[in-house]
Length: 301
Length: 159
Image (cartoon, rainbow over all chains, first blue to last red; front, side, top):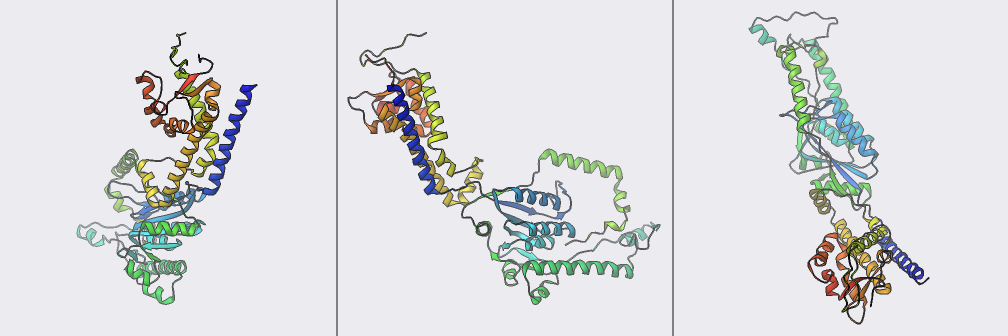
């Protein structure tokens, strides 16, 4: 009986300590240390598919969109920082990422590290805020449709291009034949349309005035300090400022910063590189030149 | 079965080491999942690498302060669990179940003695270092037990 009474007293004290612990916890508040602000690096050219090689590391819209979708679903992620250092890439992948960034309900802050030009600036403009260094390069809101023309080279070596097409403009931008004025006009028209679309998007995303739009329409790039006056960026600063801004937008005071690095395991890199090399050896170098379909025209933003 | 070494001078049998170990495991369980659980829940903290942890605290100085504060309070509550129960009943729940208790080697048995003898229980590494004397010394006491003039003995073996 005495032992049982002692046990009850011990359990009673455990309960008392549990209550004390609860009271202290109540006053300290619930600090969820798992709240995260995730940094996604976007560095190098932006393409639709990943292209990892020893020499070039690009970012694909597919990979970034997948990452953004995952972060959107993760309730512990309170905000996203896009750490951008890119001169752009192809038009569609840049647009796809920008559309996704706009779609996300969580705060997204773009941090320009180095440069956010062309398609990369498109992505940045879709975020809630843009932070850049004084000397970062921003802008270059333009479209590039240029390509190399080998016609003169082929003529020099007496190589003739036998033109067999179904459809007058099928080989319109083939580097193996002369580019006619009519074809140039058609391509220029498309480039202008994409450029207008691009400018409209930037104007809408950043709330630019007509004058500001005109100022950037010639695809100039600007330093961070100039870009702020043109409303192309919001703040001059670095990662700390971007982090604090994201927390502010997310309405939280504390969060941890997590960096989402692109996986680049040696084995993956090696296998991709060998597969790519084998494929090209099989095709022969000539195959690359002889691929004359106009679908190969790529507009770069 | 081995013959128990009886301290005839003091009239008490030092508690078997395995009993002390099991008692500690039971008490740790109670402390972690009952007593300090509400406090520990305040800091839901994913364990990551040293670099990630450093980056986390570097970018969240306010959180570092709270983390340290909560850790200290949690450790304090854990020490209180052992100190209060041992002072009031000479036993924690683990010791009660293993039928061992704490006694003072002095005439009086104070709360400060109980508090001091349990200081190393805030961390397993500290406790391991503190416990070295059980194996190296002659008295079956931890260093802090020697300092606080206390010992853990078998119940019902006093002469």
